[in-house]
Amino acid sequence: MAATAAAPADTFPKLLARNAELFRGRSAIRHKDLGIWQAWTWDQVFDEVRTFSMGLAELGLGRDEIASDLQAGLAAVVTGRSPSYWEVVAMSFTNRARSHTQLAAFEEAGIERYRYEAVMDEVTSVQCRFLNGRIFSVDRAMRRFRDVEEERDPERISELQPLIQKGEDNAGNEFLFFERGGQRQLVAIVERSAAGERDAAGRFSRELSTDALEAAGVTVPPAHFRCRSTIVALS
Image 1 (cartoon, rainbow, N blue to C red):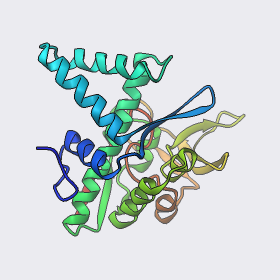
Image 2: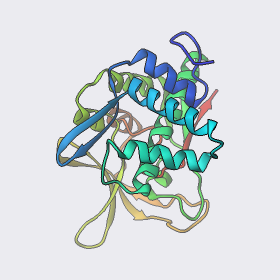
Image 3: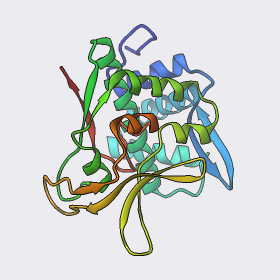
Image 4: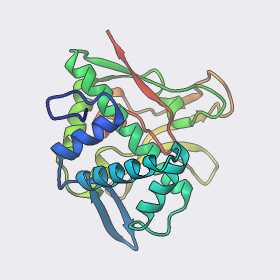
């Protein structure tokens, strides 16, 4: 059964169906092609995914084949993109949707705080090592999602929920930052990255406070492309 405005969106297909109903005509996917913003609305994405998936499933195709054909179908509109591009887009889109669904469930249950939880293994990013274990407000995170839903300007949306990037100065020192208004905003200086280590956070200095991180909108996954982190409710 598809989710409606009153029904819980507890799976990704239900979330997509619900958003297609609630946000019909509003942009779900945006990208720049030759400097011009291209957009697909929530109902367009839902109709396209449903049509492709149902048709290909009837042909007996498996999940990987369906994903490949979905890429081909979307590539007809968004040209010149490699399979890895679509993989990154899908992962980021799904991760953001999952965070929204989790937060909505927390809010409905009256949970006030959540913890950012990273997979702490050898390939964990510096960004997620920095955020791992930090505790944030459910209310502030949900208010930021609502701001994103109401915003029409793609540039402004990317500033409301920016990705954390890793940079390096002329001396080879690493730092974390996000971009806003064309300017880099410092998140932390990386004193020791712990890259390649398991269960190690590394060491940071000049860190943004919890309040500053929440104000920046960098408190839920994905913190970066290919992010594997999640959030956990706190009682």
